[in-house]
Length: 173
Image: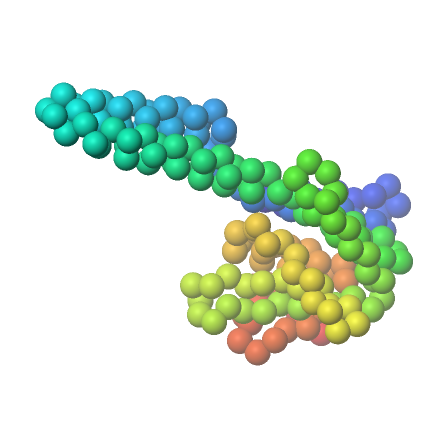
């Protein structure tokens, strides 16, 4: 998901990049409670029939499901904030605040679009400055990456396209 803002001088641009969350934490908890109840009913039924060793495995399965769901939900909260001013580009990454901050001179920074090995793999966007590539929009879906490439190609200096990448409605310099 891309939230785009413009500065008051119309020269600075701000992009907040985050993944789409298909289900809220409340919805995830409801799903997990239903899965826990189902596993408990099945485990108790088998224990009633004398197959009690199933109970620890059912508990471990439910515990792992809770842990993995919690971990994925934490990963979905990661954000990238991209500030573009006249002089520099600032990329901040983090969950609740800026864990990392990368500053690049705007004049020397180019947008690189790399197509995946096949059509099933999404494009990847990089900011290249002085021989270093920094990936942007890692959590975005394919359509959001195309939209971000469109926005950045209009703002930054000419877009460089690597072999195999396909245009999505914008001109290449």
